[in-house]
Image (cartoon, rainbow, N blue to C red; front, side, top):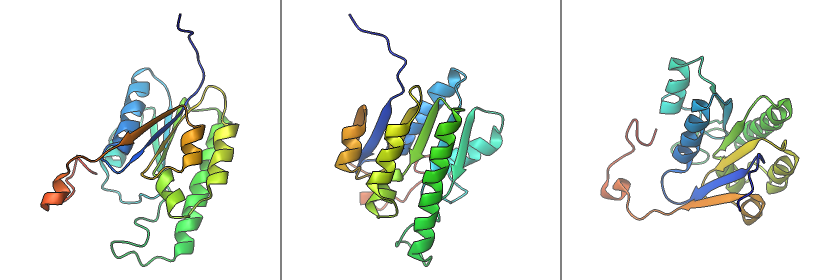
Length: 181
């Protein structure tokens, strides 16, 4: 017999393939359909042209809130911002996540690209693990981004690794509006 549980879970979507943030946003959409409140915290993104940000602006009364903290690409694509600025932004995002967890306002909080922030050493895994351990019992946490550290994977209840099998980028097809952003 399967036991019903109301335990909040920790989800990790990682790997080299496409679909990590998309899967998390799909969960947000599903929870929203059940009138649950969701918070998406973006650790690296700051580009206003992302479809999820446009959605939030078009539907401000939806129960999905998106908050960006990122300073954009870190060390690539012409990034000229000091590394310290990226570190400070990631730390602010994590502190905000902790504050919102304690507020108990949300059914689900998505830490978008937090694994990349860890890989880039903008955050320490120990600080993220501390938050995972202190989360309220009924809160669902979703962590996205390639290269999730082993300790984060071990702390999670569900881990999905996206594997790239084929990608149009390999044929020179660039990211497309409504698909990648």
